[in-house]
Length: 309
Image (cartoon, rainbow, N blue to C red):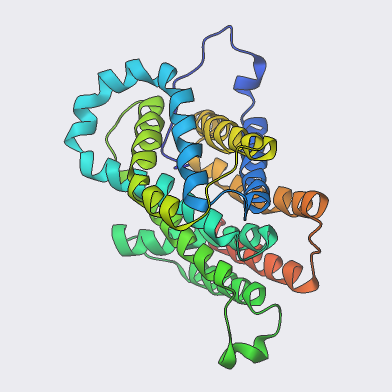
């Protein structure tokens, strides 16, 4: 979710949890980590476009009763910047999540979780290209360290094979998804000034609608999803937790402590996800996973730390 999305303050009667930003952001990270695990479990059972479309359609229906009055009020502002709102819906809702689920048909959940650690640095590159925000020497060093970490993960720790590399299809797909997600993270700086619920309501619904042509194609080329208990539970999880609950918790956390202090919680996602992939998927982390993860986090630390004045 974009760091610029903020939700209105909750009423005084709301539970104490609404004023616990670090807990809210940990819940967000846990839900997003679980999305990779559930997406991996769904691979081969629910086609990726179907999973993404049903996820966001359900999330839209869940959020609509709360967002409707804000959408009506903010519609003139949305209409004035309809183009950027549609692009945000396509990149952040439709494309990224569909590509993530597609990638999980070919690679480990652990790989996608670790690669996701590079997201803040890809955001920095988009910021330079679109907003003219130049990288400092420390940020440049951080980007290089992070890219080394990504290479270690993709190459399974054997850098000598770089000249004859054969990328895992899922890793490549997820790198594309990551680049799209980073673009989505920068673009909200150009979005209209609207209520947080208006933003998620519009992007959830528009993002799902943009998937309809791809859904029709998938329904004619791949086996249909079976209405099994496990598939229905998967749909329930992805619609409620990494979509509705995580986005609302993230918005509230950002509203309480600001985007800059909330950003490091993106890096909690791979930590939760690594534990969950081992516990629920039986995946076995190897030395190159830890080396790559350490390089990525070191790069993020070097690039994001406050410079001395």
